[in-house]
Length: 437
Ligand code: URA
Picture 1 (cartoon, protein in one colour):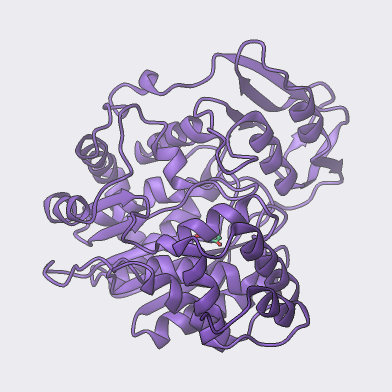
Picture 2: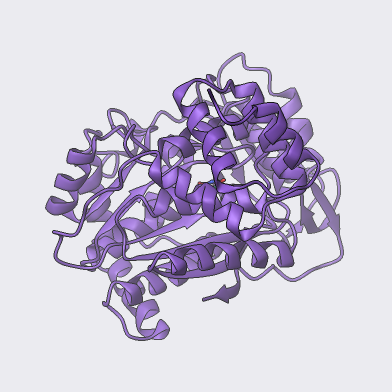
């Protein structure tokens, strides 16, 4: 006889009471085993969203996520294994630039990534825009690739944190993403299943982040750092800006294209993207014992970039994972052929961007999913011409939408148009805001 009744556990959380680790375990294992249906887990997630969870509950959920699979065994690899994870942003293609650069310095980077979540993009979807590239690697494939080239970027397998994969897919479509305990346990559960020594967290803050205010972002960063340290890992969290899309491109193959440009040391107009990447990389290099100070780490990142080391490592990763060499021939990326500009109706300066709205516009376009089994369109996307602080004339393009022939993009254009405000000149917001360690 089962010890618990799901509805009573949901009710308990709904009423703001803490759940025991046994109750959390009962719900989560039942869900994975198919004994507790998604609608009850969705209700529990919504109750958690409104009522929150204490540190003990968050740790219990993190442990459940780790325990749902079997962590990668990387002890045999002779060196530090370090990864980074972002809480999610719009135009956030940092991983595609960062992971190859850091790996090229001799740090092992075993990166288990996620798909688009809510209005934010996901590294796996971006990688899968590369024709032929596989992200569904087995544990054995991951370990052997790490041994060969020091880097792997793949999805959760049945064996790595499968509970997070299931919860993530449910949260994506039930508006239960923006919750500190759910984000913290999801990220830390997944990352602590990778067999890493160190982790750098990129906690986004601003209109396009799940955490809109600095205090919430800082709260999330502290919870994650505490969980990681409690489990014996080196962890630091950077708080970085998401008041506007990062870089200039949004959409899966467009972001791969932009990442390749940065790895070719073309940083013009994407200085924010490079600054965030360099800072995260500097911390990863410190954890990987390749730099002693943050300044040393930044210098090494610059050097690796200018020497083209990251680009070469990305090429190796792509070919190892079965992808076509889009680094030599970017025309292999399936970029949508049709373009439509979104023109400014005002003149002045870009004063603010509702970046979540821009993210949802990209989901509507097909970059993300509205239902769990939707297929993303890897070719569609948005180019961002103007960012906060830029002057703009009436009739000048602010965005360009890349879409398919015959696709109705009226609503996308409307969302993009209403995502910006024009006004007096404001300074461009700083990309890196804070550090929690
Ligand atoms: N990234 C994750 O992996 N999980 C979340 O819940 C949010 C962002």
